Image (cartoon, rainbow, N blue to C red; front, side, top):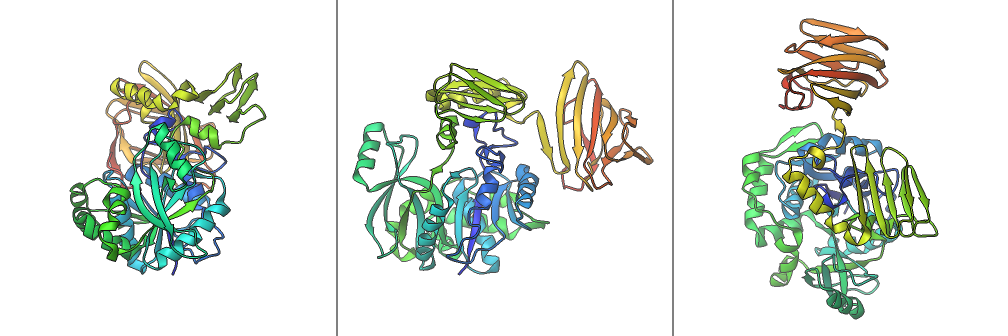
Length: 481
């Protein structure tokens, strides 16, 4: 029986602002190394020897991230992943139900369900726990993985375990899930040896999950089945029937099924497998500091960082040199358009900053200055009254939509590569150091016919320069706005 990875890639990671934004959240960021958290998750079963692994992971996400996810998986050698697009966020139980329905198209594999935004520093230990869990799952159990606690953490939910279930395997009986405790209660949990942190990682056969969700949450099962039945394949993407999925309740895997297994033992045994693999859900900047490599004084830096007389401090630089002097237990995060400074004890409060920015209608919570698109990316490098300057990079063979603007004209200067320009009835090529003008109201398109990235500088001028001033007539990527 093979294992199929199910990667849940929703959520916006607001407590990791300003690095994490709604349109480019934490799972897409390289926070602990050269690869993003999504890519690290996709590689977590590489060279897994205990059981055959399906090379095509199944990713459940929303439409906005679809091209970024596909590209990041391509970069690590994952070909033709199955990407299920949720029209609306409905929590993890519907996401897993959709994954199980898709997986059953090709049999009844064991599903390894992993959030895309977690860190595992000891992959070998992770794989050993997965091997134990897969044996229980193959026998029809519903398995969750409990993180062996190393401190009385109040920010995580806990799992209470019972007796060992099989000689030579680490699995224990799953007794109950417990909400986030206060500190004294958390200390009692750790001292007892019965409790583990709730990792949010699960394992079971696709058919076992479907039987359980149909029993305990039939409204979720029926809505997901109807949405999946009305699906429309689109390359590597699976688009659900929107109306049916809109009726789906929102619930977690824990609440919808796992906490209720004792009421229906015929559906499968609940098992918790202990895991000590350097796990973190990277829920805030202090958690990232905890799992990062540090110098002798406990400082962790990423990007261009200089520490002087600092201790236990995290500095995350995205675009320039950040020099920290005399900082103790601090977090400093720099991006091209925002800087956040906090004491490590207050990193959970970053979400309050995000809430204030949203209330003020600031775009800083939505997107970075550098914005990724299916054809490449653009960086808004300068702006003022009635003008905006962008650096635009178009991937080889890619093209933007055929479009027009009601309120702005554009000047394009080719910096590198060859541009194919459509403007009105004309289509022509531009080489390096050549330029053109797109008048207001003219239908136009930019394409890269070459084999190297095309880079241009675009100067927009007009009365309104927002991204919503686009009328699309034709688009390779299925966008309407």
